[in-house]
Length: 419
Image 1: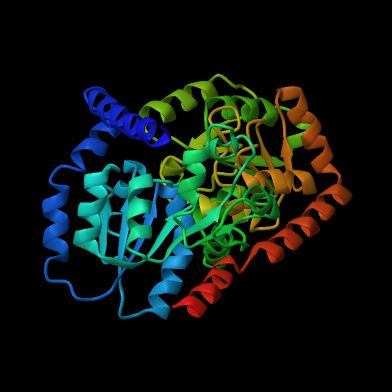
Image 2: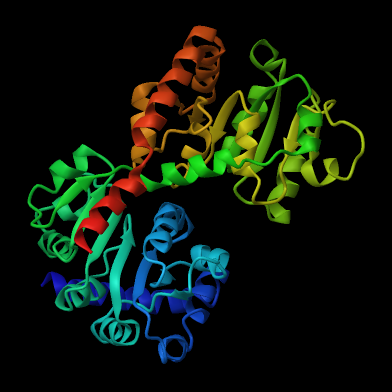
């Protein structure tokens, strides 16, 4: 019965997204990116005789988790070729030219015919699914073909369907993996029914953000903007985050000697214009955009707020911070906080963070501070203004980083033993 409902569910999803493509640019990319997919796959693999490693990521965030593993696999198995697939346009459209992948494709929609046809064309020798991808027909085909298949950096929670009384079909999907690598011990305990090995290796994203921080860029115009002030760097912000931050910057008791760098999640013209409109109504301080600052020869330190109106800078911007803020906590969930934590800094975010294991762990350690109202945000700011509290946070962040690093190496050790 579960299999029937699953098939109906994915069929309805496929129909719904085609209808949505009439109105949604993202859905349109999802559909158009899969047009002619079988001809393109067949052409790519028609004369291929190298052994293929296949990695599947839902979107861009999962790619960042898989990326350290891709780099390690390419070094360990240089004669193998790598196929990278995405489910979402937000992953594929950004990484379709990723240089370490020999091929990058959208994953055809799951189904008994599609999975079998895909396996026949690609014939993978080793497969990695990153974090939250559980496509029954693909995984079952891999199991039937006895292809080693791994789930990487997984994080399980008690409220997921696997652990419901009606979740038997989905529990069986987990049995298709050769091994499951999880982020924490809680996930191991939840999977105590599982007949495949489950091992705690941590989150491979930590390896990725550490590498990024070691090669962080410097921006001379931002050095000029910052001058001798402390900096609050706010990354991946949405409107509600920004409204709280702009109000906070007007509190001279807490942030008189600070400047604010905002890197919004959306940098389209409409959002930047809206943010500018909100900033222009504040008489307490002035602001500028990075695009304007970069065109000016004068220092921008007369402005209190700098808006980053491009993408690609955020991971390096955190190195300028004294305090960091990560957006999304008043919407679907927070964005990547590890990019900030890797600099051993306190991070602030909104109240919706419980789905993210690193956020839960860091909140428990006191490194991350959450709030649900502006008044609570002020309380958090007062807490961080205490030098003793700040020093303790830095030490706790350092300890967390050291504990979490090396997930990629742990996974590779297992693969080397099995291959």
